[in-house]
Image (cartoon, rainbow, N blue to C red; front, side):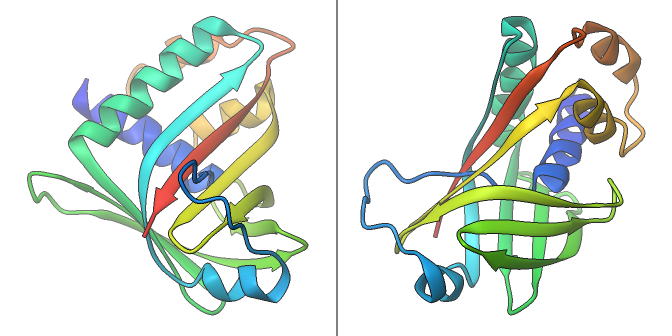
Amino acid sequence: MKKFFYLLTICILTSVAFSSCGDDDDDYLSGDAAKGAIKGKWVLKTMTMSSNSSEMDRLMNMAFAYSLKTTEMSMIFNETTVESTMKYKDGSSPQIVTEDYYIEDNVLYVNDEALNDIVASNFRISKNNLEITQKNIDRNMLIEMLTSDDIDGIEQIINMIPNGFSGQITMKLKR
């Protein structure tokens, strides 16, 4: 089960790439200031799904919460690449994914190789908080996210995704 939740979260994390918000710091940056401020290391603190399916929200949020208890997830933004790292808190070998990104008008675009697509996410950034939200996730996109890695038992989860599914994933990161 530990491996299932870990792999489920890494699939979603690398597909969504970013989603976070700062509730204790409301001096959000935009334009060139936002582009410059995103550089550096960010640690994932929360990750949530909200959708038109309370059962999928419950399942995915449970998986995200479990993963955050057992792993440390971080993102390091360089000039044109972002390195997403997930490692078990017990020191096991990490999983690292490096992808190209760019920013336009406070939208973060990540070249997601697992999905073979450029994924756009809204983001807000302040000095110490980064909020990234990927909206408009439909059933097919969620299935692509979940099947980007080989996870035992994933078929059962896929069968639970209702037709007409629509949602978003939000991650909150801190420096």
